[in-house]
Amino acid sequence: MKEPSAITAVVLAGSRSGEADPVARAAGVAAKCLAPVAGRPMVEHVLAALLAHPNIATVILIADPELGLERLRGFASAFACGRIRLRRPGPSPASSLLAVLDERADEPLFVTTADHPLLSPALLDLFFAAARSCKADLVAAVAPQAAVAAVAPATRRTWWRFRDGRFSGANLFWLAGAAARPALTFWQRVERERKRPWRIVRMIGLGDLLLHLARLLTLEQAAARASRRLGCRIAVVPLLAGEAAIDVDTPDDLALVEAILSRRTALGVAP
Image (cartoon, rainbow, N blue to C red):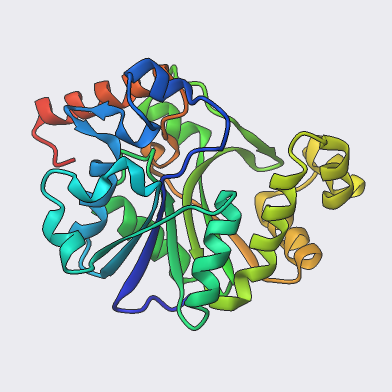
């Protein structure tokens, strides 16, 4: 990946249609991205980190316009000048990203989620540096279990088990223009079939699934097999920063990130 000097970031802040989010419900807000973290809606932490990074020129915020995110405290000028652009979500996260990718097929995109309040310019630098060495159409970040445990020993995450360790997803992605489209199209098909897991197994391939379940593949080998199946080059980069894997999916996660940010404040560490 060659990192451009001006990066377009995409923030997924939509909600799944027809499903009540447990974090939004616990916080008493209309959408998860508005749940307060350290006195601010969590989406504000994400936007602040992105706007503070010198290479991020534009942020496309995919969210329901009815939430009124353009009125977020401290971000009115960024919305007014077009540095943050609000976009209505599609039927699914993959379809939302495909629409942006089709409009910006000649440029790479950085993608993250609005439930990642521990995002920081330093973490972005770490991901960009790791992804820069990859000649891939799609780069995804993960965090090793030991790195996550160092930040939050008791946290419960979803672990992907490989021959070379256990990793948790980090919701940090790099799409190298239109060449990444096959991966998003596959993701879109998986979303459509999420209530019919046998079809997803057929799409992934029983052989690859069994190899993964038996932990016979390294992380790199799994990415190589996925690349051949999807028809685009996929790379997965481990980040030795446990906070990369701590997004907010449950009320317990919300309490965890509150505690981490409070600890940072007490130590005088910049968020």
